[in-house]
Image (cartoon, rainbow, N blue to C red; front, top):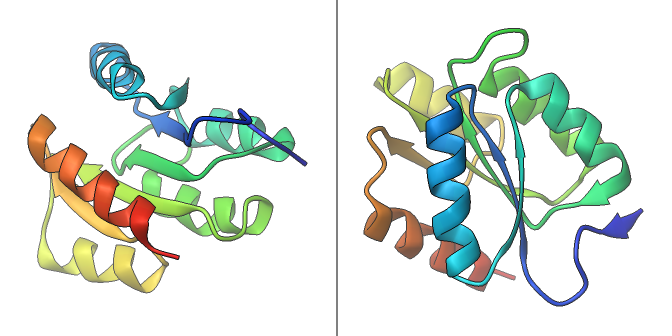
Length: 127
């Protein structure tokens, strides 16, 4: 399995809302990350089969395969991937379930860019 990109940290951004995907992708690329996007969990898993990503940022509520299912499945094809869950429908139960499944952080929508940058920096510094 090849790294998604040799020199930059790679991020897989998963969201069924195209304007969210495109906006966050552009910001993350400006921050120096290699970014690939997927519109749902199945597409994200497909991308992960042949590429290794350092971080996945995923929406929770999506058609086909939601973010919780994706979180559980992606760790089988990309062990050690760090995951940030993003949702507009956050509650304590969902937060606890995401953390039990291995998420590193949980952010509510609308995403505050400075908060996201801080969270990514913290996660990327972890061994």
